[in-house]
Length: 617
Ligand SMILES: Nc1ncnc2c1ncn2[C@@H]1O[C@H](COP(=O)(O)OP(=O)(O)OP(=O)(O)O)[C@@H](O)[C@H]1O
Ligand SMILES: [Mg+2]
Image (tube, rainbow, N blue to C red; front, top):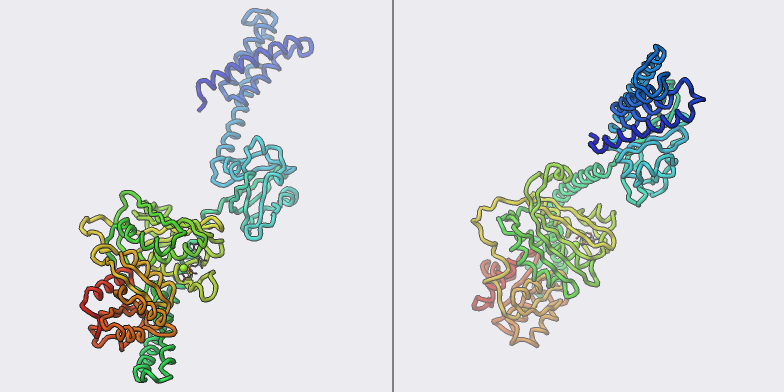
């Protein structure tokens, strides 16, 4: 709809053009006589082409008046005195009306065509026979980064930059064959179209020649479809199907493997208990047990990934649960890394297993720590998130609805596309043999899936990493208070000595205990633990020891400690149950903690043992 101002301007231009035509007719009077109306017909044509029907009609009326007034026999009077004049005037008016009508029709169909092409969601580029651009729709203008005015008459090959998405090699569009041989073309490879400003779009290309009424090629039309979001959805679906399949495989293998491990552990434990402490073969049985313990750890992690483990879900206030982990994470990350917690306002409640949530965050934190060897910032944010149908369609397995999002980010090394593509797969690691098991994130993935949530990663090399975890928001019944966290009655101020050869476990135990008020001493094996204990006997209130360690194992350490100080309180941690710990089943339950354990379980156990009169059997 043209504005009133626009209309008034077009009518003023029509008046001005008529005045010009009058001047031209007066100047060229001798040459064009008796066809004075020719310049006025030209005005009608211009007016109706540029400004439409009403401008054409106005120019017809003005032209008729001016011709009658200035160029008929009875000069400078309106009306006519001869039939010849009348016939001339009528001829002018009729031909002007015809021009107005036809030109207006042509103009309308051109506008309609332009509007149609402009409304198409794909980029449309039209070129003429020599291959120069004659039309770009707005999508094409945006994709190429050039407005139509700038691109018009330029060769398409000059404006269009296509590259192979995988190799990065430049690609030429077959414009010559289309224009000369008249072939249609549909690309099968994935291409990147780079705009003038360097923005790349993943596209599908198709092109066809334009033929005129005689079947002759008058140009070509190119259509570029942005496939970025479709590809993203496809990639997500493929990724989730792949994870599903790996999950099933891992779950199956882990289940069967666990049965075999039970047999291996059972018989080697029997072997060991049959052998006296001095038997040189006892060491072999212990080695088998240690290997089985590691294998059991792996299968537990695989099961966690494949959703074989069911946690005890509770309705919790996410912000409070995360806040209670903040200090522990801070210690885990070390001094060089700043831990920032940004709880979002009005975050809803979620139903999760707190122990699993803790495990997921610890795994993410450890990865971030590894990615920031020179220090940096580790941030945990919470935000309420509303997922609509469109957004859910892009995340397979996710339903539209209310979610709470935990955003875990770091300023570390970041990841390349290859790492991002395999990140959640079990045993995928870039950390080299013996350094990473590659199970950390697969466990996080399993936990999130089990909580009916979803996890996304955004990362680029050198630009840090962001993990977004969506957990379904539960209706707030207002019934449940905060979960019992690491605070409160499980805290203490005693001094605890840790003996564990596994760095990860030792650091975790240290972080959990120190966060809850304890003074902690760390040692890497039984022998070292014993000498530290001897030197600080008065200070140390309790020892937390792994059972299987080099040099001196946990059981031997326990025995030596008790002989040094019969009231020494010892907590044994291990991946398998050792029959020789504790005199009775009850006693064993009290002083033994099965790996993997949660910080909460560790704190409870430590407090119980410390509060009991003595752990000596
Ligand atoms: N925050 C991060 N920054 C950079 N790379 C990361 C980050 N998190 C994960 N990665 C990459 O993903 C890989 C897989 O991580 P995952 O936690 O599953 O295994 P891992 O850390 O290698 O071993 P594990 O956690 O079992 O000790 C890592 O080896 C690393 O390359
Ligand atoms: Mg890890």
